[in-house]
Length: 121
Image (cartoon, rainbow, N blue to C red; front, side, top):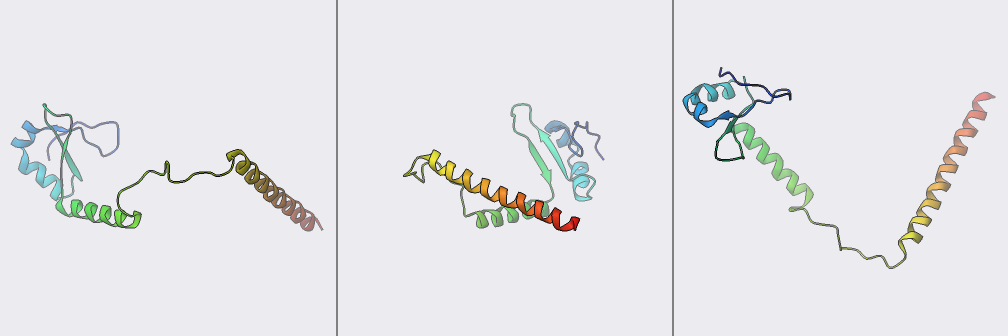
């Protein structure tokens, strides 16, 4: 098993330089295939982005999960900004909503009080 420095996060390895990984490719692949590591992160000195060595079955599962999520959500995300227009003053809507919520709260509070009175009997 290749020695890797650890980060402060649990089970997360510091990326291994690709020059080291090239010399130890079979060892790193064996670590992943035998479940000693879930993944091996690789870095390249000329790029900020990292590469990851993972099991093909894990990647296939992630792809399937992503496809199912996209299907359930409905494709690409869209912005809600600008799809609706208020025809009344927003403060009026909020005032009515707050009045309704206050009435519901008072009814709930009263039901608690009546439950306490019944339990004392």
